[in-house]
Length: 291
Length: 197
Image 1 (cartoon, rainbow over the protein chains, first blue to last red):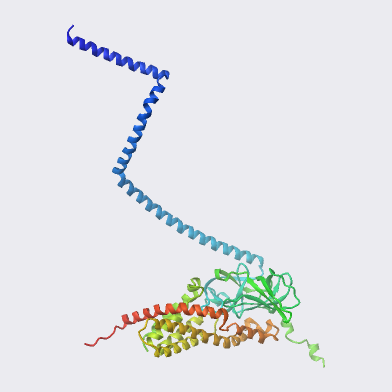
Image 2 (image 1 turned 60 degrees about the vertical axis):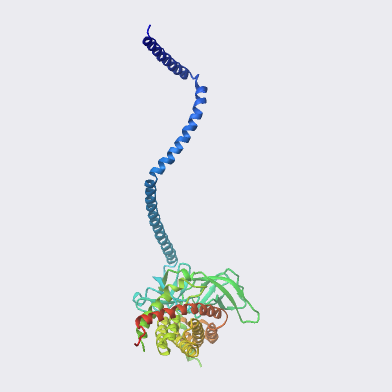
């Protein structure tokens, strides 16, 4: 037997042994006999693989990073534009909701007193002097608005028209110094005059008979006396009472029902039924004839 | 007279509209600054009493158009403020930064004093003539004089009104400086100084 033949035999034996080991491993693995041995080997390898993968990711990110960053920045810019658009839309919707709410309150008010004829108007300005409390409306004599007409908001009486042009009207607010409205209290039925306090002053109800028992929290309504305002329109609520035995009349502080600073839309009452007192202006004939 | 009148009409119209619409919504320290008053005094300091009076008349009339105050009261009070400011200015050193500040504060006080005085006199007459207010029927005739006197007393320059005027004067003082330098720069731009060689 020469050397070459010996080497060939060794090679074949090696092949057979390797194949045999492989088959043995397959058989052992299939039967589950190798699990503990494989775990013993796999754990350190898995740790090494994890470490290698992490480093590979960092390296790959470093290579592809600038491209991803540009994409991310572009996406961010798009999202910013979307956010801005949504914010604008949100503000517009809030504005519409506010207007809707105001209109709803006004129409609720209109439904309560359907006998009045009203003209809706928008507030376009306020008094240019801080000593006076008035506002300017976008409707004037062309729309049938005249001096003296009462103006109401969703929560109650606002004031009275005191000057008009063709396209605008100026309204003297209840809180103005010169505003005086005949008023009646809801519970005690006491009457008096609701007057504005002007700059920094509180609205008051004056000329209330001393014997009247007024309670804090009572609602103040228009009495309708004099015919300048319809009766039972809400003016405000009593917050304080000033009563001195030495005086002829007592006085109460009123918290107005309307927030005059945030008024946007109002109703001008162009027609309402007033109490006709003209009959009392002339004496009856039998009285004139009597000596 | 300079070009003041032609500038006063559009400028005061703009100020009156701003005063009635935008400024009430952005108060400073609780007060609404009166741009027309500050602008008039700044112009009067720069151009003298005659131009100042024209600005006062135009500005006052525009402001009264958007107010419940009797027409002309603001103009009269503003003219008084311009007169006092220009008189005092003659006795003060020129070219001092604080002069416009002091004069605007002084002008604001004079304006408010005269304005309140005029209102105390005119408003009772105005109220009596406003038939829609129905003052006589309100208090059955007997208490009408008392009611009118009470309305007049609301224009006393004390208490809350004094506090308001004080804060207004201080805010106006700083605004006066800005308006003065604004008008001064505008003047130099429109009419540059002549240099003789």
